Figure 1 (cartoon, helix red, strand yellow):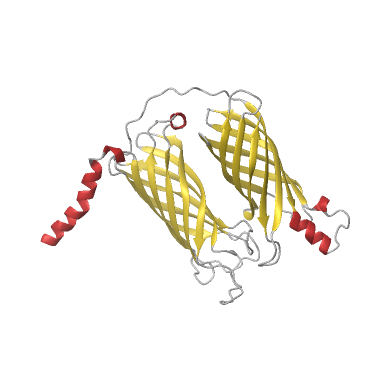
Figure 2: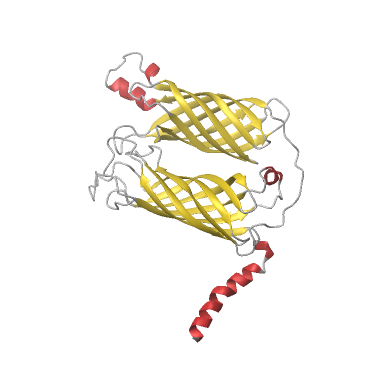
Length: 371
């Protein structure tokens, strides 16, 4: 009996301490058990497991409007996510630990109910990868490295039972790949559903700083990016080839916090040029068949100096062997310069993962400008 009382005290004491600490107002933890399935997005995919499961844990902070970008986004929730995934066939897929930033956006927010979404690109470690030796694992043609890009998208419907406890259900999609930095790299795409809880020891509503931030104009801009990535091609443990990228697009800001994008994306694959020359295909015209052109639309969510970008495009020009029908890019921009006046209005660094038909093509890093 004494032990039980001590145990209850041991559990409740830190919670009481938290409850008395106003500095922790708005901080919380979220736990989501996930049931899912892997998407077979290529005909050479290995055997599929019946199901997969994951545990997604998030450390969260409700912002309190201390900065203008927080007020413009109605005090969004930010944090850090940690996901453990068991794909279902350990001998082929292995298991994964992923870490990613959390930036939650409200779609509908009510007093008791809300519908939200979030998107984060981070890093993941997977226990199994393709190996020639010493384990001779040639069945796993999905991942060529232990360290990879880990991307998580989640949308949730949430019931706020109290200012301490929330209950949610939702849909999630995760992506694991290294962007063909090391082959093989089909990548693992998993979709699923989850039920979970969110707990705030002090409160989910910290004292908000009231403000009236300046409304920015819904301006148009002409923007451009130049970047580069590195990939292997055809041969595992083969040479690395650069991919050169250039993008020209128009953007329209709205709501002082978002941008709509539309433009043309260009990628030149030096690996394709080498392949065509080596095999004497399109002799003398190798460069003309080594680039890809894409018409795209996109969206950027702005969090002051950080932007979260998603693009979807349709190719109008293919390389000699790639006939994929869709192209996607997702990633972050970090703004070194943001001006409302003058010729040069924006200067940023960016990092994207590019995929064709949801199969990762390469990681791309570069510089962007807006005028």
